[in-house]
Length: 560
Length: 77
Figure 1: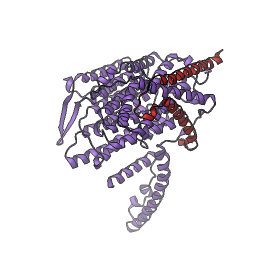
Figure 2: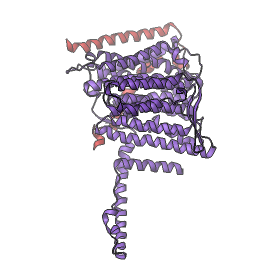
Figure 3: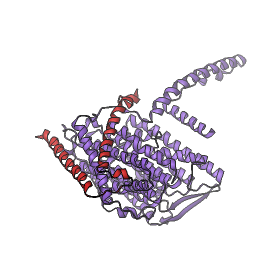
Figure 4: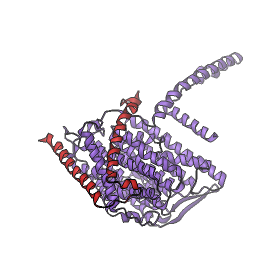
């Protein structure tokens, strides 16, 4: 029976039952549901559940060599998040987190675009409550923006799926290209969730506004689901190589000047997605293996880094670099775990990032793509700057701290410990990771050439940091907002839209007024039309303005 | 004493990093480092590339503050 049960569904059902479970048993129940869902990992490959509805055949549960590694890491991430949030009593967040993880796992197993759409929207609708659970006014506003963007992605996916069905008679997940109009819709839908350049604003806007534990959950699923979807439908799409290369390079500069360390990590997440997107764009067996391996290890070390910053936020009350420093004395374990995460993301040999990133770099080198290779090599120095040095340095060192804080709670330390262990274990024994990758490739990351080359890059980048600090050239941390692509819909569109709607409002209102007056003259008994409160036109709210603007852009795309 | 903790840690960290850096450069002379692109095989190329990239990223980022940095409550206004 369990073999036909959609993976992740049991987690969603459990999430709805959580309110009926006593507080003390909630986390064990959540873990149990993840464990039950994880049984599906042993089912092997094939199609396990289909559903004929309205003349459509929906493939609700299928599994293959691309699904499996993502399914494994999504289950691991769900377990880490549950352990990390063990101390928390926030029921809404627990429900949302478990349902969100379940939806993401369900999405991995969808075999057609309509099933994928359902899960795609489910991840949006569940994760928005995680942002909401940040429980500040800023978090609530960010949640609304997040929802609009995420749902728009789903709508584009649905339009693409419908067009595809209409034009080809097929709606199953297949390799698409950008020569078809449905291909473009689906590409943009995935691109929004994969945080392509200029479509990335939602990520840095919403993730840092979430709670201590919420950000960890958010960092794992949505964007990697998009990477999975891109790897399945657009492997070998040339434009992805450039899109990915831009993604690796440009967030680096934003991360340098950002003050909120969780936002720095969000820029860093964007940069990491770039490496994966490049791998999909190349589209060879080696590069696709690289993308999957990178997504796998990235989920662990990014969760670890977000957990360490979550622990800092929990104990010190802020993650603003300008107000932190010196925590190494009070939070020694968190410091060590954070440094392990930082070394993993920076791709130091013997850490997980190295064995994954090498696959993508080797496929680029092997194909002679010199420019992209060095953009990614350059971006690797950028990763070291913001995630390898900036995060641990400003949080735990930088300067001595005056007020004492406590070490993170034991459950947080356990979650971070497991993640740190995995980072090192995968780095030391990469063959276990390579075994679960989609293609069988004989690859050896630890060659002397490669190790020395990478170490030279990293060590001399650290020396550059020490040099800049010594000569006081390193920019000091300033409390500020760094403009990002969300500026377009947070400032520009309302800036144009609101006055415009106001003008239209005044015009239509005066029109109705005149109409009303003439009606009154014609039908003197008609109060409804002559009563001005019935015809008052209101200017749309901030969220409304954004929504209307997005709908307008989508309308333009459809017409074009 | 307390004030010196971070300083002394920083000093010894710098010392060890410089030693490791020097060793890595010396190691480059002991064997031929194969790379995908021949110009990257020049002695110490990755080291030079890492140093310059890092300085470039930080300096350009610092310069970009002029255009991208706003007050903390910018979006609340």
